[in-house]
Length: 421
Image (cartoon, rainbow, N blue to C red; front, side):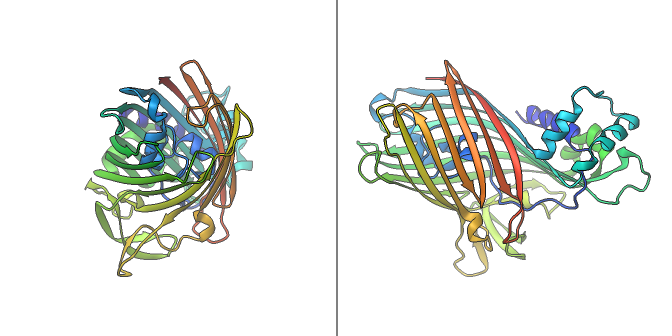
């Protein structure tokens, strides 16, 4: 999975990292993995978690992937899920690349750069990943999940006025790449009515990160080598816990609580771009070969999330699902050690969404549409299932600034899953 993810990152970013000028890397709240369906709902999923995305949002939701009476020894197998997406700059560049030579010669690079002068204000973001999961219910009433995943996210921003030779391949670019490869084990418990749920999850992960400058020519030819030789690599054990409680029946409110990245370590002098100070920040710490101690990917800060959802019925076969969340809450018992990130503006913590779906609220639905509110910006998404295939897509606007005013980056993402029920 590591090699697949690195190759996919190379293919996408080697094509998309041309013709854009923006100094530095955007500041956005860190997230380890977010599925396409939650992205379409504005990431408001803490009290919704009722499908495979529960392992990334609230592990207590593993108990709600199937109705209690219909869960079997093998409840669901997703093998595989493939995910990919990019932002507006990447999409424009990809369209421009169609019909052009894949050669990396200077004349080809110059032609592409001249075609993209109007897009020089945009940076580049891309994400690729794969996962495979199996859901069990042994013993009865204690669902659990085993799985494996890879996830790669890359930001690229060419540095302004940094090319002394004038040759396209000598353009200096700043890269923030994080590639995770790991597994997961999720354990969950539920009461007889399946309205009270608890979950605990373990995510052993190898992380490969590159947070530094390089030239465009080296990016195209030696991206994978630079990550391995000049970047950071280390191991971390992510631990997540979750809770869900439905007050009466499924059209009544559901309360959700999730704590992601329970502290397994701390990083001293971590530069918090939101508080604009260096702090001791705790969460999932990655230890190993550290070539750049300033990389923000050395720790995934603890993230406390609370949410509420409701599912009113519109008819026998159609219903709505409303959800609202607060993310990236933190605690600091002594104002020295921070479990999570401080200084995050309240608007950046708010997530909300509504989903219109066809079918039983207690089952995985064949068709759904959704709209959401993510950190002050809009999201859209949809799911379509036919046979063993599930296709999901979303458009979401991400806040990529550490300021109160916010700065949006429009992104597009899709996933394809082979589901065995």
